[in-house]
Length: 447
Image (cartoon, rainbow, N blue to C red):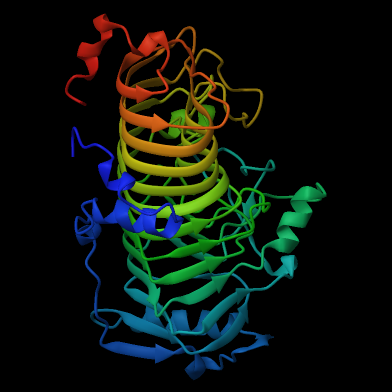
């Protein structure tokens, strides 16, 4: 798609939906990475109703889920087992999954998290974070949890997993949290994973959090949370590799997708990067970022491709963020074919974002950010086109921008410091650091 212009957009109606359709029609919409984990058929099927599950929205079904999953684990059927959730609302506490399992939600099936916080167990902090992300010490277990598993599928007929997160959001606002809030779904140390055709809503914290995982597909999901809900990131691949995210809609209170890899000295010591992350045909809105890297990047982030992205009512369209003390290498990031309608900032790459776990971080552990290509971006009603701020003692290099048009009511300029690279066909004209003829060669292969 190198050299592609935006004539396809200009032929489309001004109606938002039609713009999306025209944009998608010009994209490689049949290109997919989902083949890295094939969908499996399970010959052995059981229903949550077989274990006393009641979908009345009132009965607590934790025992039914625990017993059903125990049965799957211990009978260990060849080819695994499908756990069917019929239509209804199934209230439950958090539960652990098992390997060679499919959790299948029928149409109009809802798995709903209890709001009794006493029923949420505490688990150890992630070693790459050293403590809970919000509070020192442990953290609440995710609503749906997996650790050390393989061949695990969450799918169905677009049933819903509802975290009922408002009680947790209020605890955060009132500063009464004792421990870090739970994610809606967290997979740890696991591989060969699929999440598909499910709606996730009202997560207490991050929605889908694969950490220390490999070979994972997330596609055809819808993720919803109010714009004011704190830290309800959509999908956060964290110290994970070979992750495919495609064909999904996300509207939350924080970053739609944020690639992470550990927090300051703990992430540096753990030393596991996120790499091989593909994000394709994702749409959504958020007061924060659409496609993000960071700010927890201490294990490194490399080989990320995000393309055919549609963003509306955004804080920042594209945000690469890190900080002193993070260390880690961020490199080989390619973001292309992005449409954004209404954003405070179009593109932000910054080395001063994010807090620290404690006072023991090393201020001399500077991140290295290089080889970032952002191309084929069109934005309207963008208040400020771009802010690129590297670090004085660790400038960001190889920042390559091409075929980018960001229009807005204020005609504000780009802001840049401690960055180098090149820009071709960028409007409004970018900073001088990216337009020097001497630097164009470092980006020629990207253009």
